[in-house]
Amino acid sequence: MELAEKILSEDFDYHDDSVNESSPIEFCEPELLTKLEHAIEEQHFNSRTEQNYRHWINRFIIFNDLKSPALLGQKQVKAFFVYLATKLRVSKAKLNQAKLAIDFFYDEVLQKPLTPTGSC
Image (cartoon, rainbow, N blue to C red; front, side):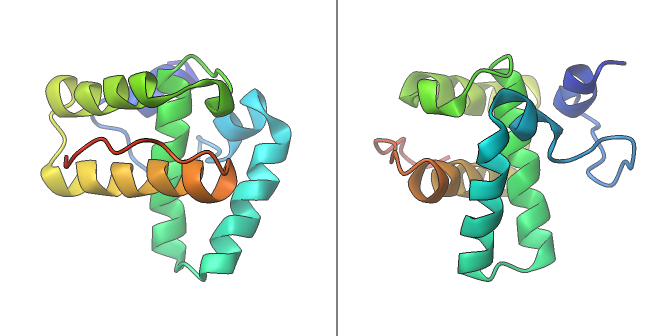
C-alpha cells in the first residue's frame, strides 16, 4: 500500500512505525517541516498534540496530492473536511482536532490565515 493510501485510509494507525510522520510535509516543501517544528516549539505543545497536528497536516497535504499548502486555500480545506466527515465519517472530536491543526498550520506556519469555515 502506498504512503498516501495508508495515511488516508479509514483505519490509519498514527503509531505505525512504517510511516514517517514528516514525509508528506518534507516532500511538498522541505522548509515547511522546520517552520512547523519552530511553531510547535513556540507554543509548548505536548508530544501528543504535536503528533496529532502533524498527523492532520500530513493527511491534508496527501489529500491534496502533495501540493504546496501555500498554494491551497479555503476551497481545498473545506473539501478535506467534507471528505473526513462524509467519506471517513470521523467523529466530531477528530474533526475539531483536524480543524485546529489546519488553522494552526495556516496561521502560525504559513502565516496565511484562512477565512472562517464555521464549526465542524
